[in-house]
Length: 109
Image (cartoon, rainbow, N blue to C red; front, top):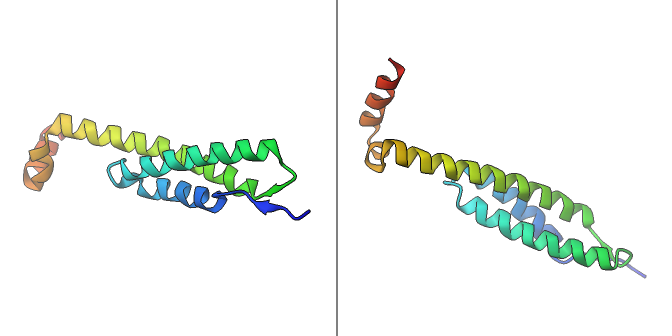
C-alpha cells in the first residue's frame, strides 16, 4: 500500500518559517502564523499517531512544529518589547527621532 502525505505537512512547515521571519513585524503577524502552524501540526501528529503506516511526511510536521514554537516565543518577546517601549517612551516619542535621540542621550549620561 502506497503511503500518502500528511495533510498540510508543507503548509505547517511554511507557516513555521513565516512565524520566525515575521517576528520583527511588531510580533503580531508571526504570532498568528505560529499559532496556526502549531494547531495544524498537533492535528497532523494525532492523525499520524493513529495510523503511522499510511502516512508519510512526519518530518515536515515535526520541523514545522519546532519552528512554530520558536516563532511563537520570538514573537511574544518582540510584542512584549514593543509594549514596553510604548509604555516607557510613549507613542509620540517613538514617532519623533529627534526627541528619541534626546531621551537616549539623557539616559547615557
